Image (cartoon, rainbow, N blue to C red):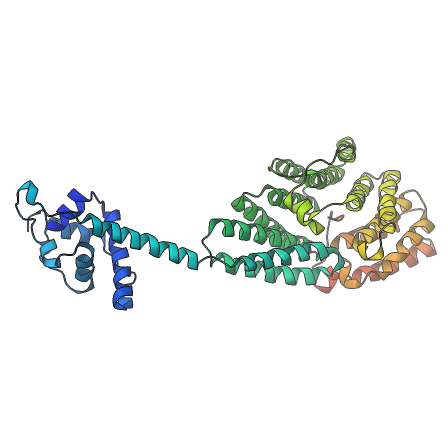
Amino acid sequence: MTNTKTLLWVLVAEQRHWSYKDFERAFAAAATDLAKRLGDRHFNNLTVSEPTFRRWTAGRVGRTAGRSAQVLEHMFHRTAASLLAPAPSLASNEQPQYNLESDIAMTARDASDHAFALASQSLPGMSLEQLRDDLVHLARTYDRRPPFDVFREGKMLRANVADLLDRTQIPAQRQDLLIIAGQAAALLAMSAFDLGSLGSATRLARSAAIYGEAARFGPLQAFAGGTLAVLAYWDGRPAEAVQLVRQAKLHPGIGAAARARLGSIEARAYGHLGDAARAQRAVQAFLNDDWEGVDDLHDGIGGEFHHDAARLARSYGTTFLLLSDGAGAQEHTTRVLTLQSALPASKRTPRIEAEARADCAAALLLTGDLDGAVEMLKPIAALPPDRRIAGLVERIRRVRGLLTEDPIRTSAVAISLGEDLEEYVRASAPRQLGTGATRLALGN
């Protein structure tokens, strides 16, 4: 059969100027409309292939039947047979008339159906508010709970967010959910790290960074980048950690607290590299910072996302300890203890104080003060085993190592303290889960 212009061709191509894609969309919309009008679900998802469309418009199909014929008739208000027949040879003023009103009505129905379908895929505002509240609570109570509890709750929160992401197509809601999912992943990374699971922590931190990029939320990208830097020097890659910090600083919208955290991480990376000059410059730069600017993550939510003065001082103390500068380490770790003691008991951070005490004990041993180190470590015994995280464990191991060096290694006090510290580590959270800390870890 030779190609012949059909009436369908005239109505579609010459009057409406539709392409195949245009026709396909109109056909699918008309099929959906018929499914609703007739109560026949078989019309749902009915489509037409491009080869079929070409045959229909070229006159290579004499007739069609079934649901496709019904859809064509619904679209053009003509019989399927007449649509597939050759177009009549009529004068220009007798050409089949384009039913503009019908086309407008069909377009309006299509837009309305799409809008209602989209609305049905939106979420109640209260759902998002509850997720935000849960995330804020998790971040702000992080330091006062065992890391395994945080991980378990964070896992549930992230799963809930992922489920809701599949149920909404509203751009603003999806962006909010991506941010919450990323923040949950960031907290999961920190708790996995505290439990000594380095590989999982790294994957979770990368996930947080990807969520931040998808949501275009710079503070989350910066936090995740800083965490990846911590994990890099933990894994023996301090040079890479420096590069990760530099990249993290470039993200837009970060405040002074974010910059301070990144600066402390950078200083410690230089400490692992043994670069005393750059480490000290990094510390000094942020000690002299004017603390201007805030962001919605490090300051707005705070908690585990915020590095306050005590946490920064603890980090600086670790940096000086890495450089074997006992006096510098003592200065900053003592500041942590001063800041903590000035707070009500309910506001203190036991793990930060314990880590500072371990670092201070190491600094005292560097200066030969064994008795001072013993006294400094006594309060950490009160920290429950399930809250003895990887960072603290590694600090204790450092102290244990210093106890085996001359001239104190044969001292009865040093031997006794060393045995006590070994037992302390055996009962820690990473050991309970069978993960365990290794290599360069000196806190987070």
